[in-house]
Image (cartoon, rainbow, N blue to C red; front, side):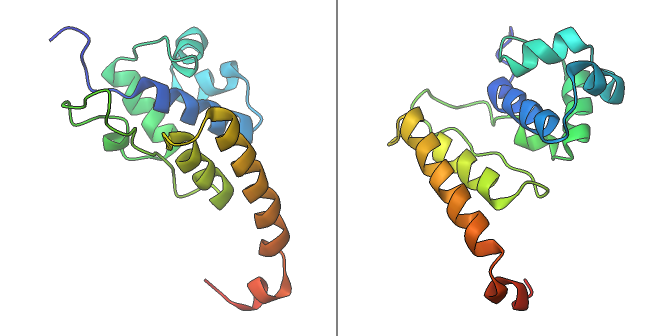
Length: 136
């Protein structure tokens, strides 16, 4: 089988980095919380590490995400769209940004610009009185 494990390492890595930066943690902090070494975390964040099942389970638990999110169903071709991964605790702008980044019609620069625009608009409208009175 080799290392064709169905792990979406890039997605896991960017999720770990996002969560770590949101919480203002260093790699060492996350290493202490998860039991995954800082050097392994660094490689995972950079998309160069191939985490083993144990590390994946620990990181999935720390991210509070279902482990299936990180596993592909094996048969993915290069042309398949990347699955969009987001977590219930993430804010709407982060979820939207994940979708924009996964959109093949958009260049990374365009996706970034659109997510910034959305972030600004969201911040403006989500604090309006109308949004407050309507309980979700």
